[in-house]
Image 1 (cartoon, helix red, strand yellow):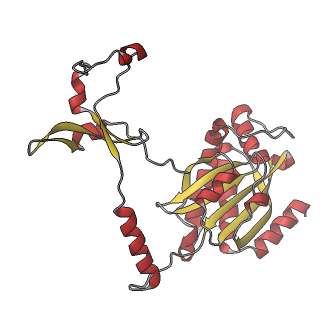
Image 2: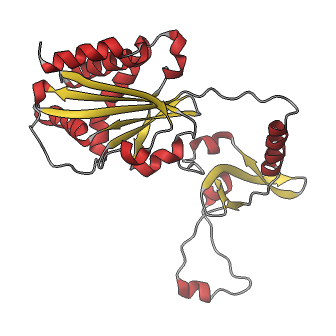
Image 3: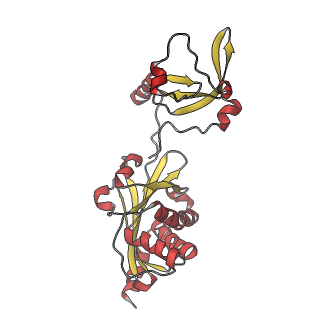
Length: 287
């Protein structure tokens, strides 16, 4: 029996159902999506608040994972693993070694399907009793390790780090999965925490937000602006009445509306066809 097979046998004896499912899912996804045969040489699992400084190697490719709207996780590919997946799809082979480099958006695109397929296969293999591990998918790639801390909860995470050998030893790599396991805490009505959240919600929801109704943006030379005097007019496009922009104080588009009247006062009708056609930017970029 080879050393690799001995290590695989040790893993099979010691790992739990979830770890076994993740090992099988990664191997299956690599074969089906990229055509790479990989062997799992080691699998380390732990329940901990991860120390990201030692967990994310330099130039790692990082994917943010999402289940629903709140449960965040992370998949981390070592540079040697991500570059092997890219090389296999670009050239059909894997070199023995390449210098590490920062991952690009192209790298993320080429590695996306393999990681997503791993998560999908994992979802099917995990038992229903382990529902904390089910339902995750890729949300986006992250620029660096600092971005991980912004999306992960402070509670304990389930960490599963798989060390793999690719194509008979041409390359080794590591794929780490971080998933939240803490269940949401139920709040008892009348408790101090419930009262605090209600008070905080009241403060936030009653805070004033300044919105600007913008008919249009007009570009005028500085000389023309300096020459303006009372009574001068600035012509506006005819379409501005139907496409009034609702913007935040810093110019971000919230919605669009139509200029009109209500009880003799100028008013805006927000929504409708104009708002659906608007290219509305989010107020806060995720991640």
